[in-house]
Length: 429
Image (cartoon, rainbow, N blue to C red):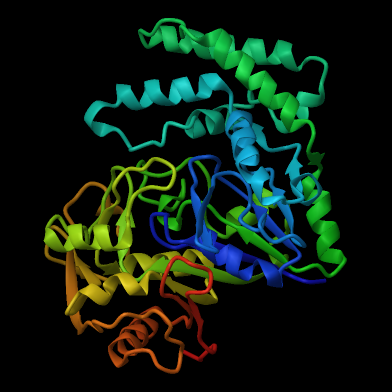
């Protein structure tokens, strides 16, 4: 029996997972999404064209790859339909190669309304939600009132939809909001999208993926968001509503832990974050602006400017530990080419003066001061370079990170295109 390899982000999301899944997909028979929903934005770029996927696995552009939307995903049929229609021009065999778990939870129009209402009610304490209805949908899932993909095949689906949305509207009224003026329009668009959804292969995906395992198929589990946004281990409450770590691949796909193989951890050569929450190495100066501009750091789902800062070793070590990372992929090394020198946060100083290389619980409530080491920049255009002719300063940067992280960096991305990817031999760190 083969293993399920897991690919996930080690920071606050936006690490470049979509590109890497696309690069790796030819090696895999199956690519499966195991959590999250349309709050994710996986950007792929090839043949001079930029593609952004939100719910569909990033292996969809590889014609021989099966793509599974797992039970841990929350799916918005309206956004899903829009995504599929945008892909039609590429002549992909989507109906043949895309499988959707009957146990995945549906995002209803009222979930989005609740998301907006809850976020607005938080005032200055808002978490920076994408307002896609993710949190309220997972609330209903945990509260055992949600609707799932398999329910659309039931004769009682409309009745159950009506009951749940009426309960949502009551909550909205309790929050001082009136009935949505365009409810009939929202409802009509939702049911049109549900009918569209029924054309796809709605399956018991846990059986499908375990059958593929027994058959010797190679499988890649694709995570969304980042490890530091995990509902349990992230910077709570400034997190997403699902388990973004490698363990989430087991519960989000129905795969036993003993079947997990490689765990690929993706990180940027620096750090970014969208929305609210702690960010120890954030640069609120010209360097942060230059980093944002050079890296085109704007959310692929929301378009919001990302907060930027230097790389953070304590948080990366934490993510590596809880995920069991076996290989590291470093993204956007080209962005740092503009800096004459580069800072690396190796420790934190807590409010009481204590130094630590751990990610402390106090991160949320107290001021954490990063302790930096400075390394020389490479100031070289990395386009067209390979592993044998990288600038020495970049090699030093990689060696420095490997020494601290104790996991080999086996891939370096030097640009957004799938061809701008450098593979390095796996070394013993």
